[in-house]
Length: 304
Image 1 (cartoon, rainbow, N blue to C red):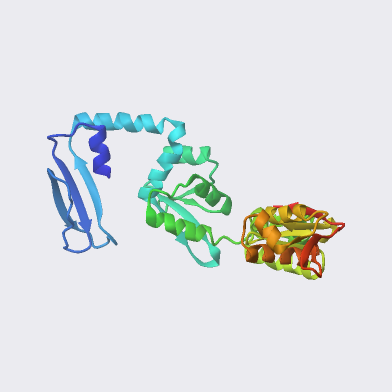
Image 2 (image 1 turned 135 degrees about the horizontal axis):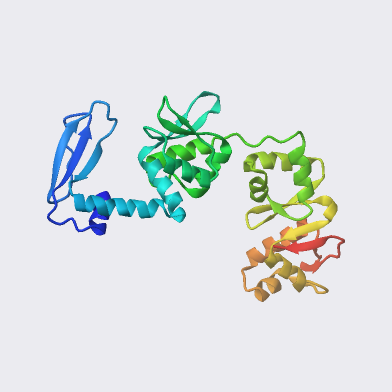
């Protein structure tokens, strides 16, 4: 990929390109490139093969420097530059006590890296002993996540998201969730919507909803495989749009299941199942002659 990009940027035909391959064993790594000289070396410290691409050319070196200067002076490219730094020099460190650290290795402080981090509002410090930038704190991790800084390196990307997803949930005061969820349920909400709003797992939100339901403060209605929750003091029933059409059709008239299924062009079994569900909600009743009619009620119907 690197070779392909450089050959597309510069005319390097008839140039002597060398690739140095470093590996912890004597195994020779094959490089599928023509007209490229490959030298293999042993580095016992290497955990995996790494490479150095080399081209000795003063002319191209000047062009390369101009290219780099143009990029680093363009503030709109700062995110892309930081992605490159992290792919090449970055790593994720995790430890005890839920410590999570983003590190970017540098032999000495880099004005460019610090300028980029400052512009992105990332807090950092440079460790002289470890010779790297140290970035901690959930707010800084959130910036890296939002800007997808780790996207260029698959393994580092995986480590980043594994560590990021383990951050502890925000701490709330006692009964904060219960009280605020209850207040929000003046209008229908799903478990997923509430989980996203309060940065909690759906399982945790569901536990709170079940407690509120057991205390007869809220109720839930299942529509298209989703549970919609609503406060009981709102006096609301939530149903699907198709069931709402059934209700409208049965307004001031009585119809058999067969007549309903013919009107809505569905099979008898499907119509009967929907009518039964409406019956359980106290919205329709089946008469002695097996016809259905709508019941009057003091609750508002919300079709979703």
